[in-house]
Length: 398
Image 1: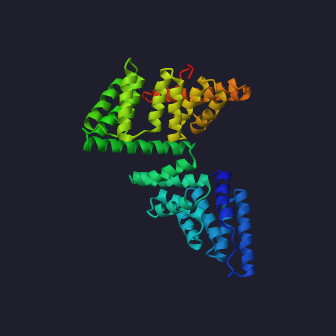
Image 2: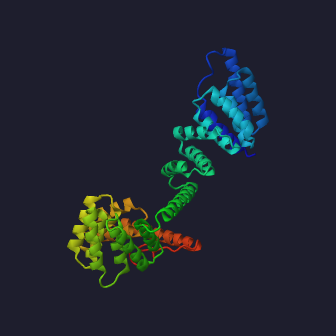
Image 3: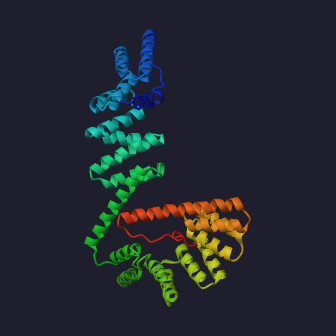
């Protein structure tokens, strides 16, 4: 057994969890003996003499059978050597002596979960709610998700996974668990939709969205139109259809998209997304003033929309207003740090303003993000999935 593991786990419990003095009911000589034994045990642990440490902890328990520190440290040592049964017993006794020991409760829950003990859930849930240390809280949360997952109870796992992503959004294990759970829940709901309402407007919308992701715009447009035939007021479909029509191109694309946008406004009212779409259409037609007006309206409707921020910044650069554009492009980068186009256009604005170092920084970030997204595309190709290229991710100017 590695010294670092047993020592750090013991330290994890003893230094943070056992700051209180022995009970007032103990005599001073006994209290002094306990302190001496505990100090001797810690010294033994520091030199990786676990047998000596265990003897000292047991000696403490002979002096004070309710001593939570000695009992918990014995539990930690048992856990470290893989004796989960003994660990669980000692940790449970330590927790009974001092119920406020959240870290002991966490380790007890982990032991019980691995032993298949039904009491594990209660301890893990309580520890997950009370722990403050992010790393340990993630470990306990992952154990709790594993417990729910093993029970086939994905609905209870979901809020825990969402909290884990919030605590540590860059943890690969957390991200893997989240995407697996989300995918399974999505598949379950799609299957239920297909069984209960196979001929519904929502089913047609779902098919269209899947076709969009696969890059089949013509087929997607057909299914969006089928959805609207079934329910002409279906929320979101007119906008999605307008977007698909514009992406597919064609001589009448703008006219057809405008008709869908008008219908969307009639049924759902105006929105930032619709204004952004209108702004993009105005840019295609070379009408900068109209484009600026639409993106400005989009920002009033949703000030934190990165698409509106990026669109307004682009228009202002084209209107030769780089200083004003820079403010919106900085907001776009803040809203969406991995947006290649936002970094590229911010670099362009910085260059025009003579901010050489800032321009170099944004240009470097543009290339780094571009390469990272290309690597992601390659990974998806290895998984036999089709992905649409990100704007600016092909080596061409965004």
